[in-house]
Length: 223
Picture 1 (cartoon, one colour):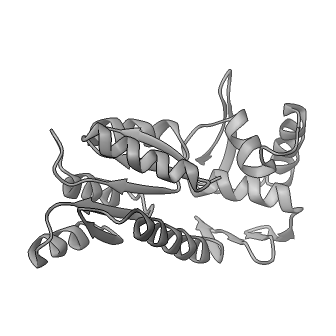
Picture 2 (picture 1 turned 90 degrees about the vertical axis):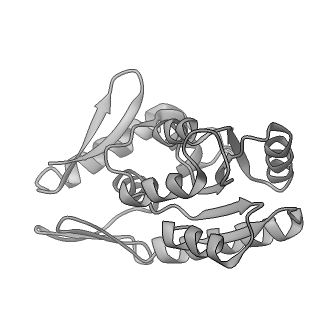
């Protein structure tokens, strides 16, 4: 299930967006300012951001600009009352991927979110480079200084997830939900086995290692 961060200081509007997203199969998380949104990004695996512009403290343009300067390339849909061409230019120059002007047509918002997620997926699922390590999603192959390996699907998806967000801690439940899904019950021992296999496969890899965060989960870090 895709997680969408809704950054909107108008709580009624935030609730409307979140309710619409939830009704259409997404998992929305609300934040009423940019600083709360940044903290959420540290704690949650977010797939897309919907952000207002005029907010107390850091405005939406500066929020997006900070994301891009930090290397966070999540798709961002800007939603604002500011609709002239210079404002749109500011939004896109800051790093936004799409722009909607209030009042918002909720059906159009959903169409745009679907398109942004599809575009992000098609890009991300091609190839991920981490140092000298290359992951190719289509073939589930990992190539590093030691050669090329074809991984079982779940091992590949697990490694791909961790390396896509180096340094970010994923809880055990987050990983189980995202890789194995919430429909099927999988105990945490399954995750431990997959982590152990990945560590064994890549014990000689010079680019990364998978670290256990006691009581929380796992993260991948650069060596």
